[in-house]
Length: 88
Image 1: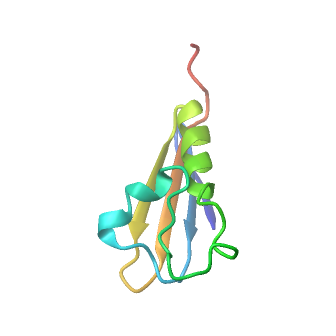
Image 2: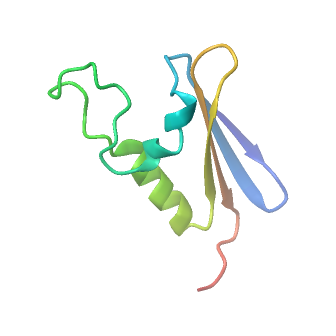
């Protein structure tokens, strides 16, 4: 996990070395209840809400969430939010 400060934004990066997400599913993992790993029993796989919630909260703060496949293995999530949230 890394935190970086830019002139107008804060950037939080989280990297893991898990199995990653297939390229064709990267955009879908922010959909509510979508789960990549269908091989796990339903009782162990969770609800598929984590990235959906992160995406919604990020957008509500006028930020962005980018999910990137790592070259070796795993996933990198980059959350960028403005230091000052614009008035509505």
